[in-house]
Length: 183
Image 1 (cartoon, rainbow, N blue to C red):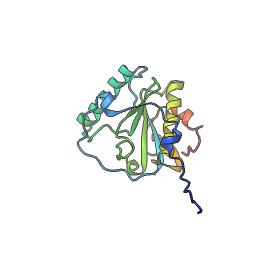
Image 2 (spheres, rainbow, N blue to C red):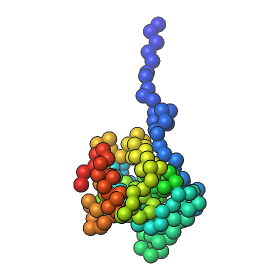
Image 3 (cartoon, helix red, strand yellow):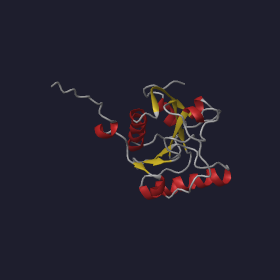
Image 4 (tube, one colour):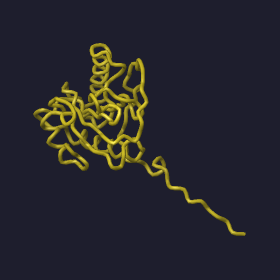
């Protein structure tokens, strides 16, 4: 008898998505969100930000920064949670903000159709280190391979969609050279 085999495509989990180290909300000590709106994925845009605050180069200092940003966003801005989907430290780690499946509060008019990735620090006059830049590139690839970001995505800086200097001149000069960037 003829035996038919169905050949299944290898899932990204089996192949390894080349994702960076992602520090979960529980690992950095996040407060629970007040509410959540589900993001319809894959989204067509990824928007790059900087926090414009202090830099961090260790797990301990980055956790502290991310907690402070969440407190500011929730207590001062009155948002339901930290605004960004993910934050990138100069320790080479990525910190989960709202994550892959929740609409962010990072770029007015663009939140429902984008992922917001923010570099931890002020990059107006200096560039993020190689560890942070590589983590960000891996995070973008990871978003595509996991199906959260369209394969034909467009990369933008926050200043391309809202009136702001974010993500800082030095970081902006770098992301302008990245694949799929469009002002």
